[in-house]
Image (tube, rainbow, N blue to C red; front, side):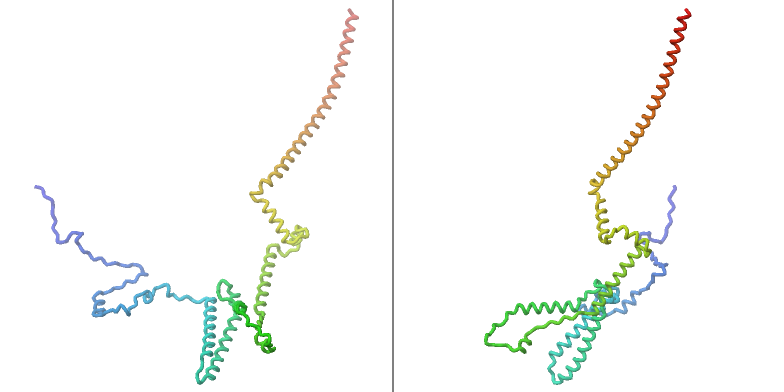
Length: 320
């Protein structure tokens, strides 16, 4: 009997075998770390964690993108400094009003120095003119003069709403009381701001002149050629005329433009046909004159031949 060969082995089937394969990282950018679970267990053995005092949020993980500190821009730094200086001035003024201790004079003297320093800081921040240097879109700081004007107008409107006291005919106010009750508003122009605006306008004009020079050139011949086309008009009027001519080329106006163009084309075609007809008529007239001359000559020859025939017939009759 033929039987199949059987090979006995002590190994388990492949599905039941537990083969340990170690991962090998060949890349230089991957660091392999060996962790021993027994050592970790010994370290944290008999340790507890209080959930009330524990903080397991993203703040302590070290990779939260919200905690990445970026460098302050000029506008952000200017806003921060100005806000801090305003808060400093407010705190100093409130401290002056609320200081009622025994050493009030000494405290006020110290605060006066601090208030003067804060006022000097405010003036320095105003002179920096950060909005004009980096642009209005880069900073949201409002202009100090505009804010003051808004506050003044609001105060003036509030004063208008207050009902005036009843006039007493007998009571006559003195000039000092009238001057004391008056409200005066002083408006001072910012010369530095005005000079800066003038300089900016001059720079804009210089840049526009440079653009015209690059387009037209510095050569006088080119300038004369351009000015000759204007016919005494300004550049704006010439540009308006060109704009109207360009607008006429719109698709909506093409029908009205094509009608006179086609009529002119028909006229030129008729003119050409008329010239061809006149040329053919002149040729026919020359041919007709030539035919008439040839026909006249032929008629004379025919007459001479007839006369010769008549003479011969007469001669033949006489001979017979």
